[in-house]
Image (cartoon, rainbow, N blue to C red; front, side, top):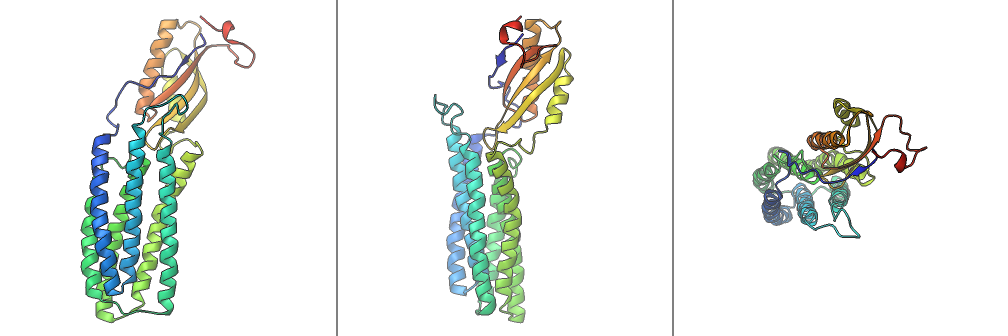
Length: 312
């Protein structure tokens, strides 16, 4: 008994993404944020508020992130070819990494301008800052809700949700800062708010950068636990062992696995097929959509035997 099985699991469980819904959410999010970015840049320019301009820059990077995420999901629909046997699924991970890099560049530009303003404070029209930031709370809040349901199913969607939620929280801070500036006339509050925005963005971006870089290097996805896979296999009567387990991300929403299953020598060929199908069903619920399983019998050593010694 020494064979391979490498079909996509046919079971569509409840955690699967609705790509049509995701595409609609991304398009709506892009439109809302583009309109707000234009308004916020204009308001920041006329009010001379670095806080608004910084927040608009961050929102613009979010538009880029949403657009890249939309591209990633479009690429998921491209069928595999003889050269790209997995299609372009991996592009979604690279896009997630690119999103993190874009945000880091935005952080650097905000930090540089904030430092300049600390040494040369500029008068700010606080009322405009308050009103525009208040609109930002609504826009970013609505945009974040678009991805709330699917935030745990895909790294790009998780990134979009977190960034938009952080933007809403940052806008609350900008409103509070604008009110305080109106009362105290402390001009240094404007660059201080920008620094706070920079720190908040860096905190939320770090996890995205770490996760996307990890997946780019084919690390085991964060939501997959090897021990749970081993436990699931050992619960099935007829499976004596599982080894050579390798798990990696095919995309930000799909995972793949290869492993060797060791069956009891009393297991028939038909029983082995049934066990493999049952195990794949379990793997789908553990977040692994594509499994390649090699089967062996007790006592088989794959370093000392060839295929013909193990076939049943």
